[in-house]
Length: 165
Image 1 (cartoon, helix red, strand yellow):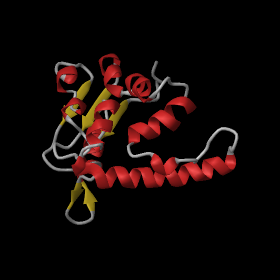
Image 2 (cartoon, helix red, strand yellow; image 1 turned 45 degrees about the vertical axis):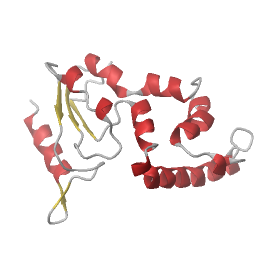
Image 3 (cartoon, one colour; image 1 turned 180 degrees about the vertical axis):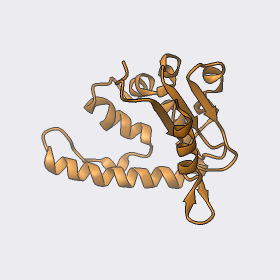
């Protein structure tokens, strides 16, 4: 069900397969990103623990080494999922692409360090009446920076919006 006011959708660097992205972040080449994400999430957990001490505990948070462990301990149970795998399976957007009924543009850079092959839903999008996928060579993860303090993604989004009838 789509609100009739929504005419189009654009997704840049969308992790369409959350489980695959989680595994990708566990690779040694992404260690620094995963460590940073866990640090930032840990800071949020401490704040939430102060607000909701009966529901959230930061006890042994520093033992978590992966985002999957974080999702197993916090995300999944807090939002009613059995575990991280259940959360990833139910919330990965790839499973919803076939049912999209509004003009949609998915853009994921080929050099996105967080996106494994599973996050480029080329097969699902091929021949889709509403969904187009673009895979530029450069862009990283939501970077898409251009010279002159401009972002290619902003330009591309505007072009796409202006092309909608």
